[in-house]
Length: 566
Image (cartoon, rainbow, N blue to C red; front, side, top):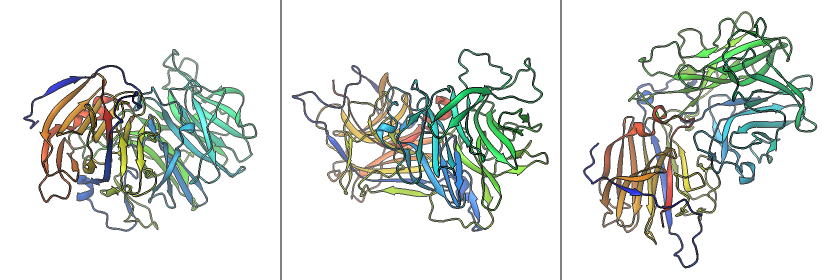
């Protein structure tokens, strides 16, 4: 690490306090952010440009978009993904062709829809595996999910127009565990399939921990007793893997059950079952897994790993496609992107089972969909540049915060975004003054323009990169100095420090550059015709890597303001 400045440690004093200051103290300072730019520069996209207009890149949603679920109604496709401890929750993407996707909103964008995230870890708690479905009998969309930190656990929201407001949550009774999924049968009956709570139970189960229960659309609640997956030809003494993430489909009169299996790491997969009745018995496909990459060599070029947790959708033309999660290790063999959303065509076996891959099949990074024209202006996949000058009245839907609304700390006036320094810290488990976006490339550059003058000792503002409460890089403007810090609940380490340039009266530009192995941090005065000034270079990017930190999210990067007053 090319850092010549002295490294020292500042202890965090006292517990995290409320955002308001007691009488007699100065009001907190505000940082003014007037621009943010993110540009991807991954080698694969540079070395493999798309030529045919019907080609597209995989993943279709790069960066952390895990546990994808997709539904079609007429010619419209909608897709959702997990958000864990972030707010607003559950991004909603729309497409007319499965290739070009547009983020239209976040489903859970009101604090009353998601009140229980405070106190939960951002990368292990919160919202797990949402599923989106459509009930034609009601003309209504459903999104059902689990808030793992609440006793009630499972809830759903509904909308007749998915791009408009969604309802307040309806908490479900009669089910436990995780990963609930609706199924609306063509006879008017409705069901929920889910993975039961396995705490304290044997690892092995002869029904793989999958259970079913009826759902009454009139009352909006479950009905009757749940029942376990009944698998054909399986005895009580057989030791079977637990399944999760179940989804049901009805195809040509048969019920198809698709589940995730093998954990969430490199052994991850998707498996399929088939039955003549919703109650089974279900026959497991003899050529499972229907999707995995675990049989491939670790050292292969441009690998996709951890493939699994899938959902299927049919097109108006009768084709079948599926979305699923996967990971892409970067140049250093690690990645901070998290689990991303991939798309592939679905094949069908002669005996009526859907599948994505078999044996040594690889998940492709480039595909074609005949008759579909790629929108070159779309910025969902490939290398792209994303900008925000904060001229709108509300934050764009790509911006997310931690555990709740930042409305108490964040305002927009049509000229800039103001973040008020908060004593709720990014290393705590409340709602700090942070707005971020997903990191979507191994190699990228992000810049921000900020004006900030602290009013009290301990106030700072700048750019924050975080994976969880304990792994964060903070490029902080704090009075007359710019510091690169690592933040954790136990300590703050200053890795590098330089004086603020004397010509920075109009503000400061901050810059983070990633080469896939290291991060490089720079600043320069706004409007000054000068080169970037290094703050720290060759800073270990694996510090934020999923392989080192665990958890279920990728890293985010954004704008932050804090107050560490005693």
